[in-house]
Length: 339
Image (cartoon, rainbow, N blue to C red; front, side, top):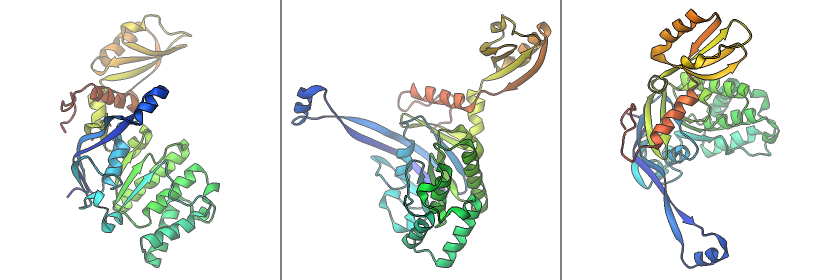
């Protein structure tokens, strides 16, 4: 059975519309106007045990709201969900012992205390046997490379070190499901790479299921073979990461270095010139025409170097957002798997 199964999950908020000016504020004391905001609408998906799934979408798309419903922090307006064979918002103790939620912009560690003291608090909260706790803590601190830092005040740690401690705290009770909301936000590239490697190794060794939201495509490419894409509260793609490249990467970027100090003047005849600097130019070409375009360029000019690659994943994800945003409710996005 799936670890997570969401069926028609929806969340609607009733938001007060404040009027402008003093007169509007006075009127609001006696007669208030509200509007409904659909944060999540009819979201359906299932995640199997051991999967690492990326959950992508622009700001305000409904990613965090969905994660909070799956964690039981908020109630849905409509729909149902089964997470680890439990209904999340019933908040049973047996359920809360089997998952962990880590939010990159929220702290669960005591700021002025060493992380080791917060770990002890978690041991008490989850009633972990002492021997199991110390064994798990030792494995995690070694995996994340922070064994020498656990007695240091959390406020004195770097942002990357603090996030490692947050992840260790979340994994101490050995959850079967890990919900990660922007775990690498604000981190430098080195810290991001280190944390992603640790998560990948932990998934490989323990088989923990991970649902990850992130704005960094590096995170998604490093960890996830499957992605969910949500925009305006609706799920518009559920499938392999490579499927986004196949369906939305209809163009290739051809980077050329010409002989001489400048690029030829009429490169626009071959495709969309995205950059031009000295003797180097980058041209966006339909992937079906790459061979013909390259033959024409090589026949006409002297080329010292050439490389052909896909557009950045960020650009292709943006196309998914754009196509998802123009669809009316209930209309499938062209080229996407049906929901």
